[in-house]
Image (tube, rainbow, N blue to C red; front, top):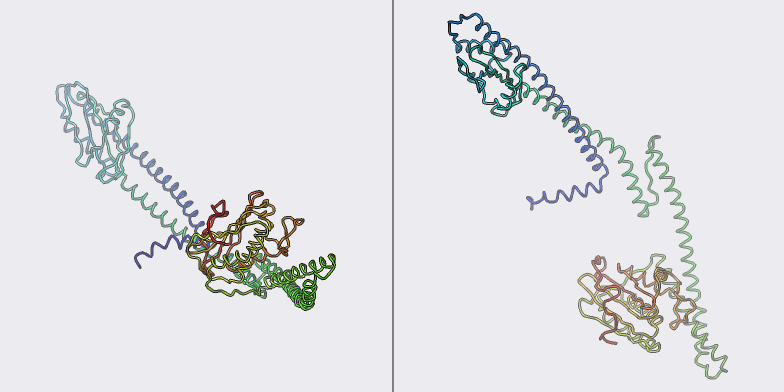
Amino acid sequence: MIPFRWRSWPGRLLKLWRTSLQFRTVTITVVLSALAVLVIGGYISVSIGNQLFASKSAQVQDEARSAHNLAQEIFDTADTSADSSQSVELDTLNATVQDKVLSSTTNPGGTGLAILRSPGQQTAQIMQPTNTTNFPNVVSQSLRERVRADPSHVQYQSVSLSGGTPAIVVGSQLKVGPAGNYELYLVYSLHDEQVTLGFVLQTLLLGGLALIVLIGGVTWVVVRLVVGPIRTAAETSEKLAAGQLEQRIPERGDDVIATLARSFNGMADSLQKQITKLAALSRLQQRFVSDVSHELRTPLTTIRLAGDVLYDQRENFEPSTARTAELLHTQVQRFEVLLADLLEVSRYDAGAVELELEPTNLVHLVEDAVEAMTPLADGRGSQLTVNAPGGYFEAEVDGRRIRRILRNLLGNAVEHGEGGPIVVMVDSNESAIAIAVRDWGIGMTEAQVSRVFDRFWRADPSRQRTIGGTGLGLAISLEDAALHDGRLEVWSKPGEGTCFRLTLPRELGTPIVSSPLELPPDELAPVGGSR
């Protein structure tokens, strides 16, 4: 596995980029500094290169003019001093001109020279074209045309010698008496200038790298001084959020960071006082609700027993008294349910709820809940149907709490199903199990759906209730689902009905990748199943 460790580097760098402000700041500073050094260094190198070339070009043009004048003077002098009856040895004169011109240049050994005859001439005598042994074949046709077109000035052109060495070739036109017009070409190597420019570029590169490293180091130190207190503040905030309310940031000096630390600590002190006060009030409230609930149980038990006696003897009473006994019996039962729900809510608020997990087949649990709710559904004209396609239906859950969720969802469906069919679907995948309760009743608006899990909230307060719920059932069901690391979701549209979907992980702590059922499920009508 060692040869493949490099593959994890991009991921590590990306994670470091996301999590480290210091690394991100230093990286951005170094990159921007490198770009700035690159631009400035490029501009300096181009400027120095142009300056070196311009200086060398002016120098070689001056030397070329001097060489041209010297050569022309030698040819003119030899031509005027000679007797017309004598033939001038042009080749000897050519060699003399080469020696004189080469000896007059600044670098005789590195300068190439050529004297070429201009084409298209008819003369009485011809001087053979010559060149030095080190003269490269770099004279272009365009340069020769420029020399013939403007014989009064020297012409030059940049060329490249073998090995990539830059050079300048300079040409001018000579008049060689009876031999006609000839062209003088000198080649000057720029090797020394190239070496100088290379040294300058190397110096700029090393200096730029040193500057970038220095900027990166300075930035790292400065950012560390700034980020250190921020990191301390973040760690202190996390400890405060975890409940360690006594944690504070060290206060040093009188700068901005110290002011921030004092402000943060003052805020932490205020929050600690408020949280302590609220915690004390919450404990008092929870204790009050618990004490009241427990204290109510004794008289409630007595009232229920007395009410049961009256309820059992209601046939012997007058009609109005019998009706009163029935109302008393119903309201005492509802009060018992409300008291139990209030105790459960107080346990959730106090964080004193624990799960009793065991492997449970949810299909059997759903069938039991449907069977218990069937008499009530028959009374409203609704048909309960269970649709379980098959799969991994066993999960680790608290059976008592899941039954309570199903009882609340089924009761809600019967209450608002308007006598229509009610379908309970169960499906699962490898990570989650879902239970959906679908009715085709009156449905709810979006505003009502957003409040359906609020405590004591009812979609239609004026609607007569069949079950006699307390308004806490769905709120408790939502808490039960969250306690299982699950989700309880709802879909509803006016006139199209409502669907609640409970999604639970197969094992507590395992993330839910996706719910096995759509919301609402694809089935639009009850199909098959058991009842």
